[in-house]
Image (cartoon, rainbow over all chains, first blue to last red; front, side, top):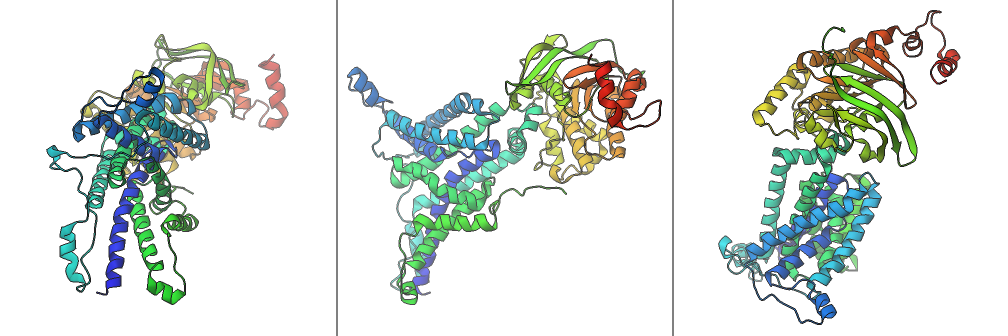
Length: 348
Length: 274
């Protein structure tokens, strides 16, 4: 195969993997949107906050150390422990559940029955509050996430770097100038985790009583209320699940690029994914992410290549910044409910 | 149809309630009614009379619509239920079937029914038995159990809505406008099933209904609401014979049929709102 084509394929596969990482964020949006019609702008910040909490707990950071030190003139910094990753994950899940309860009790409860736009504004407020709160609580330095879990057979943490195995086994596709596909092991793990997450969520929502209640609330919350489904409980459950999904996304992105505040910007990458996949579809979030991820990498590869330049007389760079949005725009025009959005049932 | 069911015991008592929406709009201006155990009670009246609001005040779905009961009391089996949330009330045996059916469109018929059992804690076998019972009363739902509720007909959706409420094992069902948008034949069928449920399962019903004719034929007693007040009450048979009801709600009068427009406001002001 020609070298250019092989590089193209490699870009496509890598894009696919990155796309799945976008999907992890989009998934949280879909969950909350389905259950409460709230577009939760804070989902990206939740991922950041979850990852910060995880790392902070693991490293025994004293929460609000900076604030306490300033006020009381102390010199607190660390508790001096280092928790195993698995324990830290469990604790972080606990924090996200607590977060869900607090959000319901102090925010959503008062906004029941308001217009979606008001709830949307509330989540924007929540996003900025949490960003500041996370900063105050855990500090703003870039943190390295340590996911070594001997119990799960990962003594060195999540695998990093390109997969040699794939490189070796794909080398035969090209000539001697081709070294095989370079695919990040972390991305493969991310894709696997996303797949597990999606399958378990779908099983949960289809076959459990709580899952059916979630779908019922998504369809008609008034009717759900009338049959005795407590909306408040459902909202806590949904936000807790979204918090868990955010934790997964935070860990994966944190492992990829360090836990830092720019992590909250992945919200902006999840938006076009949602427009493409549909706001109400869990598989849509995954497929949408893959299309966006692959599309932007392949598009970039093509328009920045020299043969495109030769043929067209110009090349484009940094298309990743806008490609996803343009694609999403096209979808909005031709298929507003997204690829997998729920069909609007209308009987005539 | 009056001999069965209704007992002397009062199940639900609404005492002089006032309901205000959004802190300003006064909808109910002192409604009192009582529902006998084992009976079918009809709540009659035209559009905007306050029938739905009365039911929602009882089931406490009002709060989600920014309405609240500002005066009066509501008791069920002698206990005040004003402050209970809908879920607790469903557990206590009072459930509302909302106007306009409100099925979960994307769920199958059977999943819809199963949501009604959400609050139950008496085991899978008991829930399964209730499901069988619902299918016995509504054989059509068994045929369509796997279809998405959104694609079933209006009559079937009404059946789903009633069946769903039955799945909670209720003692008292608040049924809001079951005849809405249904063909007369279907209305008869639905009311027939309600009657059977009342007689055979002992479920008490409070039915808000504009179709006075049908409602009075199937109910034991009735109340007539007009602009937020009860203007008439009594056994269904008596109401059906009442000349005002006949004229205003059934469209009959001694002088033969005449235009509504000529008499309505005049008579009403004279007799009921002096």
